[in-house]
View 1 (cartoon, rainbow, N blue to C red):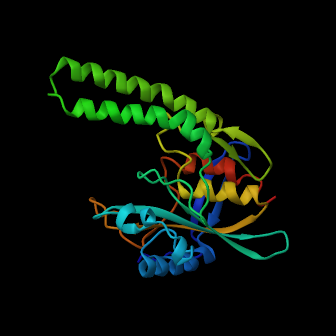
View 2: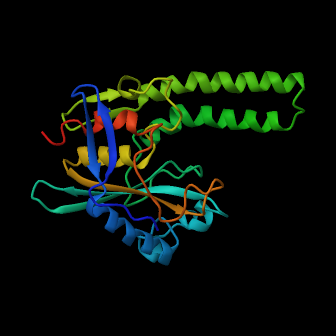
View 3: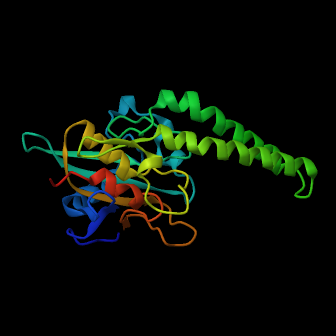
Length: 252
């Protein structure tokens, strides 16, 4: 397990409006996250908060994290309007298609819209991928299929960027396309990490975030860079470019 200083910045990003870095520390969320890891180790499932009679076998880590697969999870410490401490939990996008789990933050894009707009295109891309992989690399039909696959993906991305609506603590709401500040294009999966989910839930529930801790759980990844129990700050590629906007107004 990798420990970090409580005051070390965890979630942060540059704000175009304020021209400064907004941030949240690891703080007490780090210690709470260690407790969550113990629950993971004991129950070996994502829905450990549910009664045994209501657990879903599909949410066991045996199914979600087979072999050496691992995943990112996040904990946020908040205060409600009465000063009570509220803890929020989130997981980053799961390749298994799991979206709504009791006790965990929702996706920014609601499931109904996802199923209607995004999922059919994703399924088409997966189908074309299977067909492509069955053909020889130099086969003309494979090249044609790959071109179609790439076009569907290119057409889908701007739709997703407009559907994802990000909020901040000033009461503002903007599309992902408007908020993302890093040059070079918007990578896939932006908005599906833990921090955006946690901040969105806090904003919608009128909670004030105090600290946040994101950690990796599962098997050590192939590069060895991620190990179970290791804490990470906001990623450069996906989270930092939107955190400045989302955290704006928190400390006003």
